[in-house]
Image 1 (tube, rainbow, N blue to C red):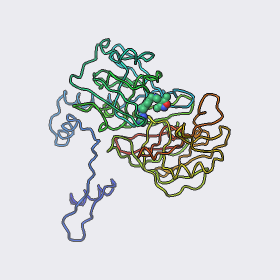
Image 2: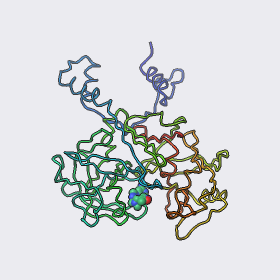
Image 3: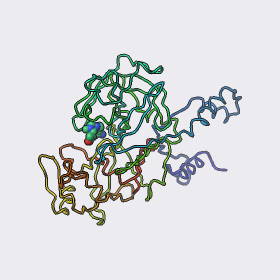
Image 4: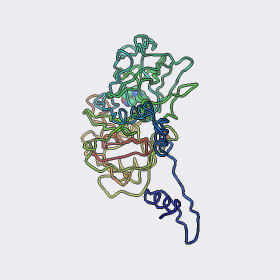
Length: 404
Ligand SMILES: Cc1noc(C)c1CN(C)Cc1cc2n(n1)CCN(c1cc(N)ncn1)C2
């Protein structure tokens, strides 16, 4: 008959947790038990388990509460198509329903920020011209979050700000009943001119939310505890329809195995470290690259030494001051670029690294790989994400990458 200590040690060893085995005659053992801060507790379930363990009576109400949580909600998932906004795959547009009756807006899903904001009936008419807008006054489920405001500035110095409502927000068939919807009373020129999108859905970590005085949760954070699994995937494609899936992984979207690596959400982004890179199919080197997986950034932005190593293989490549980036002859055959992550190699084909002619009809093209030196952070934006199925796994605080 095992003592409880010996059972505990063998159970933890079997479950892969650290445990110090007691030496002969020693009567104690110490263990490190990891705390999963993403675990979402459910009171009635904890009570149900305790009563069941010690044979206490369980009321019908308690049974119903536990059933409601674990039977109806755990199968929930969502799946939404996403489309490139233009011929350069500058950004990706996904339809989102807000309010009752539903008001459908084209939004940009952004794993590099954490605010859901929209052009609205409160956006100056001159700025909102050409945009689909959200009108809280036309939604029976909209409620003003009184006293709350928001203001955000992005890496490209674009910005927006305003006040806050809560309303039902449905993405890919999955509804969050009380989502903070940040209504824009001010938007910068970049957004005014970009009439194909009416705002953003931030899919970064809650710590990055810009609502004051009380920061709000992202749509995904609100959804996570009711999804079958607390994760979402991004399948962005070049000039074709891709998808954002919530609560499940459709492995058929990928050719390769999904490799996982720890995600660092401390800055609000999905931070990770690639283990090396190579140009043109050569063997990966071991020069690690720490950066973020960012669906809201168009380009792959890496350190100068890597950018130079790549473009040294492109005969006509040169830095163009007016374009603020490397350009080359559009008819050049570009080499591929590969990076290692989670034990897998993700290879971005040369085609994906030719973003677009610098202007309509030009024979000079703009590179999808550019320098991150003036940003201070490396960004695996859409150019890199298009080569992979990417799993944003909040529950396990990790990122999964699989070649497409
Ligand atoms: C982008 C973009 N590229 O070509 C066009 C057109 C656009 C859209 N357009 C100019 C307007 C715009 C500006 C931004 N966005 N959309 C999306 C959010 N932004 C981010 C997100 C983030 N994670 N990191 C940095 N900025 C800045």
